[in-house]
Length: 241
Image (tube, rainbow, N blue to C red):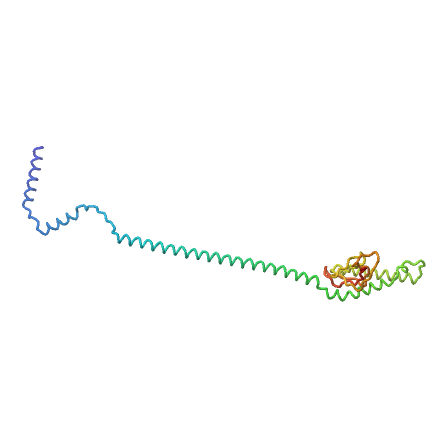
């Protein structure tokens, strides 16, 4: 059986050889094409390329130009940043000044409103001072010895009652005025030193045992409205020299 298989293979091989011998030769143009394709199919040897000197200089110049351009861009950016920082500083300074001015305006407005509130009755108080002075003069006209008489007569008792009523009225009036900021002061009570801001010297006289510029007499008492002098006190001052 093996011999038969070998015989068949030898016959098939012989038929293939005969058919190949009978095949026509390829034409010249096909041979040329096949040679060209074979040439292209061969591996190409690797090669290195070297830049020439002018190209290298050109590349260097372009690099320098790009560096110069980058430097110019950096300088312009730095200048822009400095300008922005300066503008920020100016705006901050203006903002702080505006805040300070606004706060000063608030404080000034607050003071003006408080002053308007405190001295709203100033004109009324000035008109009322004369009435208070007249009441004080009426009380000063009654001598002390008649207030404490040895013989209590009907007339003297009426005078004492009238005096007590006027004194009570004065106390209530001054207490009410004090609630609204109006106060009366008498510099001769404590022998104060003459103060031109609060006192008005009407006369000067030497007095033994008294220092110079000491207030010893009060012609008319002074008044203050919420700490401000509404009317200076008219006084007599000691002047020894």
